[in-house]
Image (cartoon, rainbow, N blue to C red; front, side, top):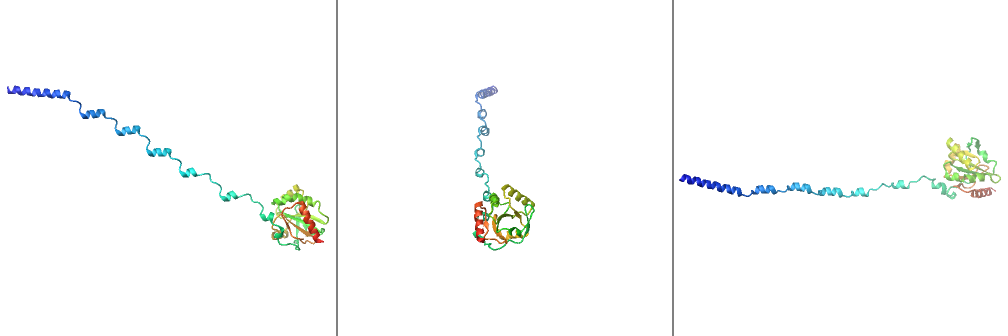
Length: 247
């Protein structure tokens, strides 16, 4: 009988356990697994906006140095540099600033003109006064006044003559250039190519081109040199003044 009662009690316990198991809700662990949302790290990857560093890179303005950099301007020396002109002394120095050459003579010379004809001091002997225009092929004022000198040479007063001395006619190229300049300007008067004696005289006495000397029949320089470019009328007035000084 006791055995039977034990068996019945045991059966009842089993039935109660089974019933409880059938009605027991899911465990919290299972519920949390079913309701779990994506891991925070996964969610943040899907919705993450650009990192602050990336935003700064995308919107950063050009660096100050790049914004302010501009094409380099020429240095002051390059800006002020200009094609060389004749030295101011060549055009502006007045005869009064030069030492007087009244009385000195041209040196004895034996030279040629630009066409190869022999010339020497005897050129002056047959004229009361010779106007000697000293110039250079590089000299713009010299070339600009050449047409007026050509006209003057054709209308010189009695007892006078006009001649030229080409200070830089020291090679065939410059001699040919002197020929071209005088032909184009109508300056059809004798143009002397300096020998060594005349070249030394120019180096020691002439400070600018053009310079015009007035020379008497004995080869003496009359009065002061006339410096710079002048018109035909100015040269005519100067010539007459020197002629008057000889009387």
